Image (cartoon, rainbow, N blue to C red; front, side):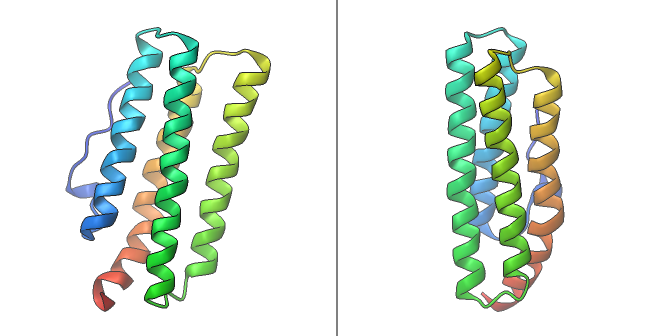
Length: 133
């Protein structure tokens, strides 16, 4: 699996949101490397937990900004956040309960939801915030 590379295509041009996204990309890459290198399951689980926790924090950060600046798409964006977190937690629990290892399939899933959310809903939100902040 290849690393996610932070570049201008992932930037939403809001410094504090971009900083959060960079951290999430870094954690994704740490998880990816740990799977490829065959690190211990307990370590991979810890990295996955950190990625999910940081994502939850980041989503709350975005939601606070959307509320502060009266973003009309708040409810829809928040719903997408909830769905993404629920799917990540379900994946995590499934892996833990079945004693399965994180595979390329799961890594690809996490890449799709991270990049897809940034390039989709976050770009729309950031365009609005960029005008009103």
